[in-house]
Length: 604
Image 1 (cartoon, rainbow, N blue to C red):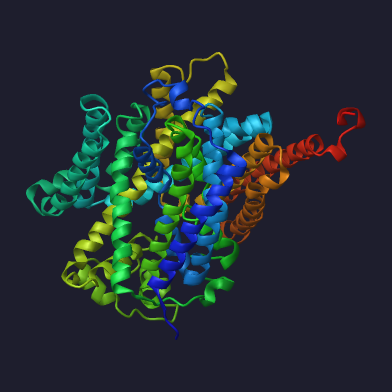
Image 2: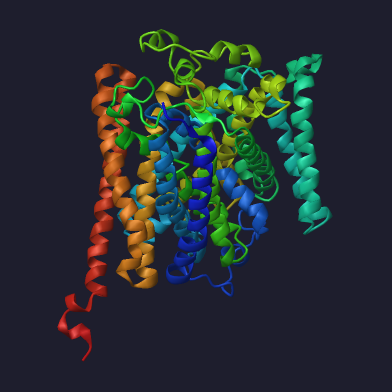
C-alpha cells in the first residue's frame, strides 16, 4: 500500500486557498461586485443598536465564521471518509473555491447593497414575487430542520458531560462582559476586551476538568431531555437580545477556540506528519456503504456541505452579518475569507478521520452488530479506548471518530502521549462549541424569515416592528425546533438536512446570478454563480430522488414515508424556483442582447 502523508494534503490545500483568495476573489471584487467604501452600509443607515450595528471587521469575522461553521465542516468530511480520502479532498477544494466562497461573497454583497435584505426578499426582488414567497417557505422549513439537527448533535455531545457543559456555559457571561467592556466601559478597545474574554474562556477550559471531578460537577451534569429544553431557551434569548450584547461577542470569542484548535491540529500535523491510513478510494464508491448508503456521486457533495458549499451560509450572509458590515471593502475578508477558513477546518476533519486505521474508523462509525458483518477488524481501537478512558465502538455520527482522530494526532506530539484522554474530551467540547454558535445565529435568522413572511400575509401588522413581536416570533421558532429536538433523534431529522441544505445553496446561487445580471448587465459574469447553481441543482435533486426511492420508502415505516414526503416537497419547491429563475434570465437576455431586441428599441 502506498501511503500519503497528511502534510502533503495540508500544503496542497493551503496553496489552493491562498491562490483563490489572492486572484479569484480579486477578480470578483474588481470586475463584478466593485466595492465602494463611500456608500453607507445598512449598519450605518439603519443603525438601531439591536440588529443594525457597525462592527469591527475582526469581531464580525469571528461572528460570521462562528455562525456559518456548524456540524457540516466537522461531521460531513468524517462520514464521507467512507469513500476514501480523495473524493472528499477534491470536493472540499473545488467546491469551496468555485462554489462556496463565491456563494457567500455574492449573497453578502447583494444584501449589503439592498439595505440588508434577507434571501427571501432578495429572491422576491431579483426573480419574482412567486419565487420570493416559495423561497421564504422553503428556507423556514429547512432552517428549522437544520437547527433541530444541529442542536441534537450538541445535546448528544454535552449530555452527562459536566466538563464540556461548564466550559460552554461560561462563554455566555464571558460574551456579556466583553460586550459591556467594548461598547460601554471602554468603547473601541477591541484588544483589551478580547484578552479579557479569551482569558475567561481558557480558564473555563482549564477549570472544567477538575470541576467535573469535584462535588460541584453535578451542577453542570444534565440529561438529554433537560438539555433538549435548555438549548431552545438559550436560542430564544440570544435571538431577541441586542446583537452586540450576546450573540456577536460570544461567536467572536468562540472563533478564537475554533480557529485556535484547528491551528493547533495543523501544527500537530506539521510535527507528526502522520500517514493517511484510509485508501484514496474504497469499494464503497459504488454504493452499499455502511455509513452513507449511496454512491460517491452525488452523495459526497451532499455529505460534505459547509466545508465546500452550504445554503445555510446564505442565511447568515443575508441575515445578521450584512446588518453589521462597517464598509464594503470588508466583505472580501468576511465573505470569501471565512468560507476558505471553514474549508480548511473541513480538511482538518477529513485528515483526523483518515489517519485512523480503516478498521478502527468503521468500528466507531458503524453500529456494532453491522460492523461484524463487514469482514474487517479493529487495529488500534482497544488502545485508543484505554488511553481516552471511553468506550468508542459503535459511537456513530462522526463526532466521536473525529475526536478520536484529533486525540491520536495531538497525543503523538513529543511529550503529549499521556494526555490523549485530555485531548479527546477537549475535542468533544470543541465540537459542541463549534456547532452551538450556529444554533443561536440560526434562530435569529429564522426569526427574520418568519417576520418577513408574516409581513407578506399582513403588511399593516406590527410583526417585526416591536420588541414584543420579536419575542413572539422568536418564541414560535424556538418552540418548533425545540419540539423536534425533544421528541426526535438524529435518524429522524438528519437524513433530510444534507439535501435540504444543498437545495438552499442552489436557490442562493440562482438569486446571486440574477443579482449579478442586474448589477453588471453582462452575461459572462453571471456564470460564476449560474454554473455552480446548475451543478448543485442536478446533484441535489438526483440525491434527493435516490434518498426517497432507495432509503426512505423501502423502510415501509411512517417516519420513512414522512421523510420521503418532506423531501419531495422540498424538491418541488426548488424546481419551481429554478423555473422562475430561468424564465427571468430569458427575459433579461432579450433586454440585454441588442440582436434580440425589437428594432424600435435598438436606437437608430
